Image (tube, rainbow, N blue to C red):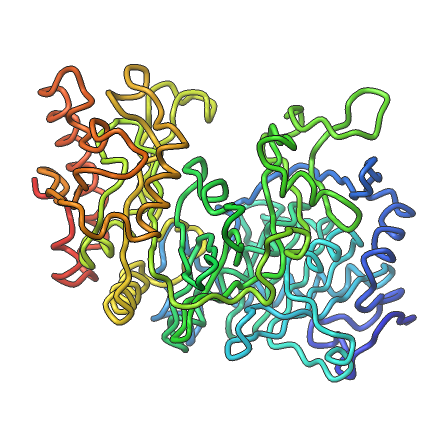
Length: 533
């Protein structure tokens, strides 16, 4: 076996069942990885120097094909169900053995990295891939060690990813030929049959969502975060289409991270060392930080060129609407390095309410914050997905249900504890509709949403008179700098006030129906934060 690069002392891959392999390239530089990727026809080089690849059949995550090994460690700790699916350890062992045999005549890429910017929580990772581009993705997305850290590196968790290895579901007992299986006891994640790099990133996020709350009493969060010039940290939760990335990208504030964070006793810290941004309809005018980050070392996925050029056409969605780019965090000019902020002063729950019911801004009590955190509400509108004709409610616990192995109430309780301990303000921000439902009213203007968030952060709502929303009970400000007072009370924006009342009750009942599955494990304090109907 030939080995090249910066080789750690613990360089044996026998624990993965790899006994023979053609060669292993350890901890190659981005330039070496790009060179290999081009030589192996994994992708092409754009005119900005970024590497562009296709991910094959899968252009997004496959949540139905993600499993946890159910054993003595996980049986009573994981919240089993449609999201967290169990699989027997024998299936894992069999697939791992087959993957080890599969690579006997192949070249592998090994990379040692860290997760968690806060040293107290630092987790040593090893990512083994069969393609240079996937190894480049890992280099972009996790925290890169110094060269002196690599010699004595011993991993705590390993990701073993082979896109070209396909399971036989009739024999291997998987749902299909692709799979992602997390073994928390053995501290190994195996991924096969999919070229979508996001499975690597989300696998590590998922294990941190298990380890940190359960073993370290630390809240793990699917959110973005930034820090102001006075050191004040703000956190933004939100599902796709709510404005999480856009609203946290503030030129006057430093970016801690755009997706995955922990909240310990000393503050908020990024899990990652990079960004994985959507690039659909990307333009330099609207999102200059992301646009300018697409340079040498960045990895584009499933994009296409303008004809007869190497210039990326970001409007081309012929392969997928989920076109992506990964790049190191320091490609963003105002990124905070190391990506650690203090304890947050303000937390924002972003929701795109297509029913025009929720206020554009409202302050939440701790019990309301926990309830809405577990609910994770937003809505899809016509055109966002095939078959979506009318607005559809979406509830995703903790604003990221597919990545949270524990019962949502465990994360919510931690949020409530920290909210009280550090006297944090929690706000719900409706970036959706006002003046009526989708098709009748209009989308909330971005400049008003920005003004509301700025007012909250800058304490300009501290002395404003609030009133309770009659259905959801949240506190709505009577005025806000830079925002017409007429839009702050959503009922006032509807021409038909009775129609608003009916729609508000409809949405409240949907919240309560969704919450039924969480009631048995939720405290009375959490339950008290629900709608008043």
